[in-house]
Amino acid sequence: MPVKYHLGEFPPRELDWHRLSQIIGPANAGLARYDGLLAAMPNANVLLSPLTTQEAVLSSKIEGTQVTMGEVLEFEAGGDPENVDAPKRADAEEVLNYRMAMHSCVGDMKDRPFSQHILRGAHQVLMQGVRGKDKSPGSYRLEQNWIGPEGGTIEQAKFVPVAPEHLQSGMDVWERYFNEESDLDALVQLAIVHLEFEALHPFKDGNGRLGRMLLPLNLFQRRLLASPNFYMSGYLDANRDEYLERMRAVSRDGSWTDWCIFFLNGVLEQSAENERKVREILKLYNQSKLEVSNLTHSQYSIKALDFIFQTPIFSAPQFTERSNIPKATAARILGILRKEGILKTIREGKGRRFGVFAFAKLINIAEGNRVF
Image (cartoon, rainbow, N blue to C red; front, top):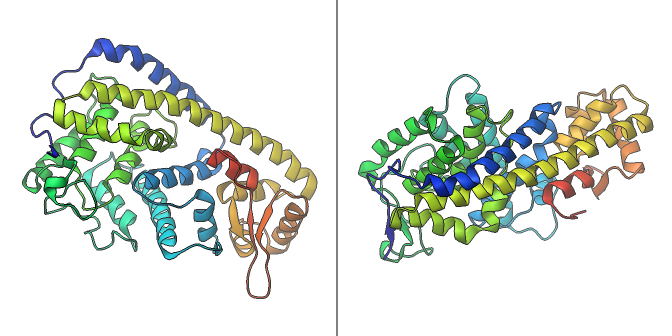
């Protein structure tokens, strides 16, 4: 029997605060340490751009995509990775859309709090030109959907979200709760926000990715993060089966406390992992700043470095046109960085075919293993 949405049971009336109290303190402390590091960064959105892309990759992977961060960035650079089929190219486009949707939300939230209007706009960006483009981008579903085997019937479903006639009222309550200044611990409230969005499943496609995108946006809006750079999908991907089962158990058994404990453990674990990666990136940036300056003897060395941190795989034309460095100087700096091995050549330029290069050390940090 499929698990059906918990109509009338949101928000939860009761939580086991004795059990939650054991993880609330450590989770908040871990997030605060990470936020302190973010707040001290000179330009978090530039330096952490690869981690944002990696988050998009992992969040999409939970939904079944099979593309790496390196492959995504190479597509974006205009490269043509060998032995890559059309489905993987479509996966890369979905990842790039995820990143664009995230940036769109951040821009919209500079002037106003999060809303369903912002959410629907993000969904429209997420679905643009990809496999979900025929699934009503930017609009809530009008039919009953379900989660289960591909091509299966509703009787074979593992979970059946809210019925369409209750969806809009459910989203209205959810939106108020998202923005509510509650007496609840903010991370517990965020756990409930995420679960409820996934249970409502308001769109025909893209709900999982949007729900995970909301996590850093909520923390940013509540000023628990200096910038919306918190990456949770690594934990959720590593614990995918438990992630899905914990969510179903809320509708089946009312297990809100168990879900919140699972989620808060994820915040604690990911805060530590995010902090480790950010410290490695900061260390690399400071080392590279001195190295690139000494090698190039150029007043534009920092601009060059900022470009390759924000775009760690890029083409020669992209560097000369977008780095805000005079073209002749940009070409000279690019030549030096290649010669000294700071950049790895992915594809040699030949004729009309431009060269593509990678800042391997940064990509390896973001991926969490040696890719190059």
